[in-house]
Structure formats: structure tokens, C-alpha cells
Length: 332
Length: 134
Image (cartoon, rainbow over all chains, first blue to last red; front, side, top):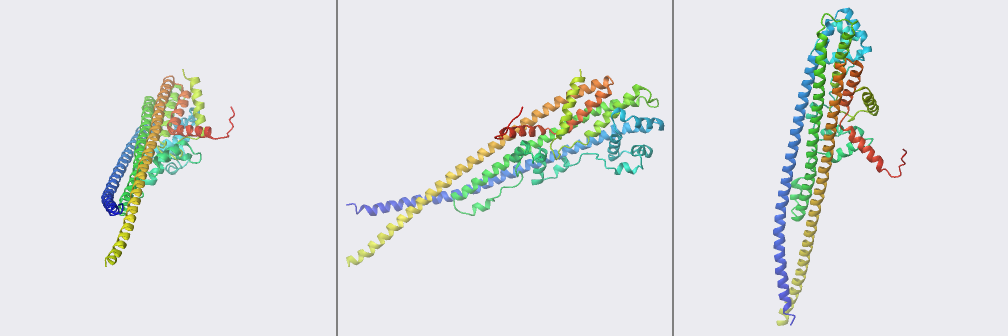
């Protein structure tokens, strides 16, 4: 009695196997289609993210260029005005002016520096003035080892960077200089930015050609996951680049505020034109204030947006702390 | 004759059963492989989701910290400029020099320096067996 059931069971098994097989065959074809779709969507997503990054970088570069132009206009106008005043002093007054520098906390090097910056933006100074600054020929000023403007890895350079170079610049900006110290800035930067603009390793063609349905889909899902991570890193880079813009805004604002005060101080000095007297305490104070403000502006021109260290050294930090204590004691 | 005819029939039936069993085995393996692949896909999706969330969270922490750092610096600059104005108005050249020095140093310091300090502290605190002297 069970014997006639065997062919029926075999028949049923064959039918069932054929059914499952056909279904799996269809699923396999569908899975390859899905894999292709997943891969293409991921590629598109990655491409769009890279475009977003490029756009942000370009905007940052443009912002830095505007900042650079602004810096140069301040140097040209404000430094120029002070230098012209110094040039108009008669020989005796000018000698007194330079001799008084030490007592007002402005070194000859500082004057040399802002004069070099003025020359760099196209300003001209008389030979006599230059000779007084350098104590030698006029050429010594322009060719001296004076760092005039911060240019290292500045925004202009950043706009031209891509891939690993951009990544490394961003990491440096995030405190990459402290790699040895293993700072959190670096660690976080690495996690967020690791290999941002580098495309995913596997190409869509690679897994679609495998022609193994579900396996191809697994590869596609793996690829899409990798793209998701890359896109998240790119988006983090975009957000961090916007913080670099905040840094440029901050420096622009500080320069603008100092420039406003420096311009006022220099004009107060100019109001004494022809009557400037180094034996007059009020005149000396006006001179000192104008020189100090210009010196501070000159130093701000050298502040880097992106630097190797991502911060000042410990010694400077201590100096800042000391000054804060001093300020709280002096200030009302 | 009937025995002759039934022999190959029996043989065919044996082959067919064997083939069917092999076929069923293959399909079963295929189904198992597919399930394995699907499980792997779910795992990959989940891994990617977790990793993306981690990157987003870290980004938010960084941005929040930086934003607060910029706000704090902005307030510090404001206070310094208030003091600078007082120094200029009162012709206090020494105070002006001190304040200007602070303005330049604050501008020169990176807003990201604090991040490193936090990290160093966190790293030091997490070091096992380290003796602390206060």
C-alpha cells in the first residue's frame, strides 16, 4: 500500500523542488537587479556628498580670500597712515621716536614687521625711514627674515586641496599637531574624517558580475554601508569646515575692532601734525597708544587660520593665565 | 520479457530518486545560503547604521563644543575690548599694552586647544594603575 505513494511523493517533491527552484531563480535575478540598484544609489549618494564637500571647500576658500583682502586693506590704510606720520617727523623727532620705542613696549622689530607688511601690500617708504629701521641699506627690510602674513595652509591653500591632503589639513586644524600626545581632538578628527573623500573600495561592477543573486546583494549592501559611513564622514567634514569659517569671522571681527581703535589713535596723533613734541607726556602717550595698537594689528595679521599645532604652546597658555590674573587685579 | 522491461524501469526509478534527493539537498543548501546571506545583509545594514550614528553623534559633540568655545571666546574678546577702551580713555599705556597682548594671544590660540585638554584629562583619568597626587 505505501509503494504506490512513493511515485506520488517523488512527484510532489519534484514539483515542490521545481517550484522552490523557480522561485529562487526568480529571487536570484531580482536580487541581482536589487544589488545593481543599491550600488548605483550608493554611488550617486557618494558623488553628491563629495560635491557638497567641494562646494563647501570652495566657499571657505572664497571667504579666506575676502579675509585676506580685508587684512591687506587694513595694512595699506592704517599702517600706511602711521608710517606716513613717522616719515613726516623731522630727523630729530624721528630719532627720538625710535629711541622711545623700548619704553612704550614696542620693539624696533615690531615696527620693522608692520613696515614690511605695508611694503608687501604695495606701500612705499622713504630710504631714510628704512635705514633708521634696519640700521643698514633699504634692501635689508624687504629681504629680511620677517614673517609678514600667515600663509601656511591658509584658506587659499585649503581650497586647492583634495582627498588625503585636505583630510590632513583638517586634522591639523583639529589639533593634529598633538598626534604624539594622542589628544582627543586628533582621535575624534580621525574617527570623523578618516579618508573622507576617498571613494568606496568596491565598484558596483565587481559584485554585479558575480551573478550570484543574494551574494551580489550582500556585496551591494556592504558597499552601501561603506558609502553611508563615507557620506557621514563627508557631512562631518562639511560641518567642521563651517567652523573654520567661524574662525575666519572671529579673526576678521577682532581685526576690525582693533583697526577702529588704531585708526582713532593714529588720527589723534595726526591732529598734532607739525606740533609733535617728545617732551610732552600727552604726545608721548598718543604716540605709544597708536604704536601699540598697530603692533597688535600687525601680530594679528600673522595669526594662522590653520596651523600645525592647533593651539598655542603650554608656555604661552601660562602667560595668558598670568595676564588674566594681572588684568583682574588692575581692571575695575 | 516483463522482467526485462521492469529492470531498467527499476534502475531509472533509483536514479530519479537519487537525483531528486540531490536536487532537494541542493535547493535546501541554496535556501540555507540565501538565509545566511540575508542574515549577513541585516547585520551589515545594522553595522553601518550604528557606525553612521556614532559618526553623527561625535560630529554633534565636536560642533557643540566648538560652538560653545567660540561663544566663550567672543565674550572674552568683548571683555578685553571693554578694558582696552578704559585703558585708552584713561591714557593708561601699560594697561593697554597688557590688554593688547591678551587680545593677540587669545586670537592666536586655537579654539581646538581646549578639545585636546579635555582629551588629555580624559585619557589620564582612564589610565589604570595611575597614582594621583593632589
